[in-house]
Image (cartoon, rainbow, N blue to C red):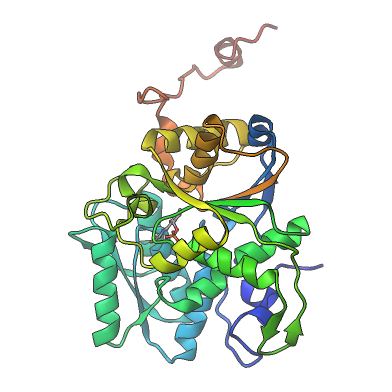
Length: 366
Ligand code: F0G
């Protein structure tokens, strides 16, 4: 029986590792590409969701973290640090534990989801809540890395991007070629940069350090569409945002580290980076859970919100293959499911402890 071996072992020929590398893995990657029936019907396309919430810690960050932690061990690091809106810290904490390294995480105080906070603590990270936003946390983490013996595992570390590019490889391997359009949420902009790198590498012969020249796997690259939350949309503004605000805390980022590579992904692919409102994000979040059967955290729904927005504006072609990366699991930040469309709380119905009462509550007749 074949068991998925994690992205480093599955794609070793295309990653900066060799047979002597001590691989730190929790079995990440190999995530499902789910056919989104209702989005396909709505837009007249074949739409798939790359469900990254199925990774070991519940987000796409694990693809990058297996590489970053492997690099940390290779560098002889004793401790790692990251800034995070939550998912990176959850992932770093888990992979550091697996590697036997100390882990410190810097998060914006009061602005990370409970599930993510719990994960970092459960895995034994030293969690510091900074009186500032993500961008402040990242600046401190970078300075810490420069002046102290701690290894930085944010996506400014190229190892992270190398790991995350495997998302594209899996999409192409599943579909037999690249999709026409690839959509994803954009925060610190590492992931859109990584996907674009992966698609480009798969569409051309690749010079492998360990396996010689590998032939192209895909015949084309997709158009990349990125979506930011409207209150935290520096790429739309064309400059950093000092006070980013959105309910989608995962992408509450005003000064993305991977600015140039994200702009290159947009422009080289002929794509766009646009904004969606918090309301559009929550509508898409509800669409995914109630129509497709896929539960994601709000930030993860930004790509779907973008597709629906552009479809309504008549800006989506038909007959295409479209892949949307939904980046993190709904259980990370479950509170949003317990609110109705008009913002009131959902209260589960209480019933007496007998079958007749339950049948009546269900409207069943015997
Ligand atoms: N979706 C989720 C669920 C995220 O956690 C993030 C980023 C993104 C999308 C955006 O990806 O930064 O590569 O453009 N989360 C980081 C973190 C910032 O700290 O967990 P990006």
